[in-house]
Length: 200
Ligand SMILES: C[S@@+](CC[C@H](N)C(=O)[O-])C[C@H]1O[C@@H](n2cnc3c(N)ncnc32)[C@H](O)[C@@H]1O
Image (cartoon, rainbow, N blue to C red; front, side, top):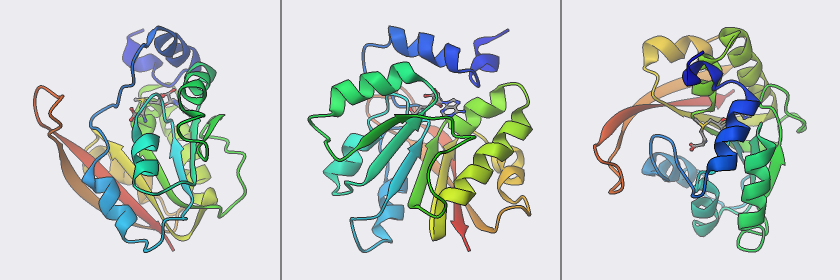
């Protein structure tokens, strides 16, 4: 089995994070696609959920921008423990919870914004990919407040991703946008895709 096919499995991620010594952001670092979305809310006390957070630096930048109510979940207990240890003093309002995004234990309609960068992609690489993607999106739809936004950042083009969001089971207005990763620390700029799902 190639490692790509194992991206949907918790033990793959546990092993990978056990060996990780630094933070790493898939695709691109904290980006204007996020800050532009958040700027539409004219308050900083919105509730943000980051699903499949890994050891990304997003939480640090969100707090630096004034958003303190940030909850991060990941299926890997190893990365959640590491992030909690790394950040509990620096980011005391930020929560780190081991949780499967296909079965979120949050109340319905409890978040203003949900972010995903790379987790739907990981799930789509695993077995039962479409069933698991639907479970994940159903859970996000449930925990999102009406008027809230689910932002998916992915390498997947509209042909491969829109069908997961335009599912009639979800009452979402879907918008797609291409973004460039042009961070100085990346060797080359690459094109990624962002999908904004606004819940009716
Ligand atoms: C490609 S990495 C992206 C990490 C991070 N979001 C980033 O942008 O760097 C995918 C992440 O999804 C997590 N993951 C995979 N399946 C998951 C699931 N069912 N529930 C929660 N997290 C999951 C993995 O542990 C991993 O941290």
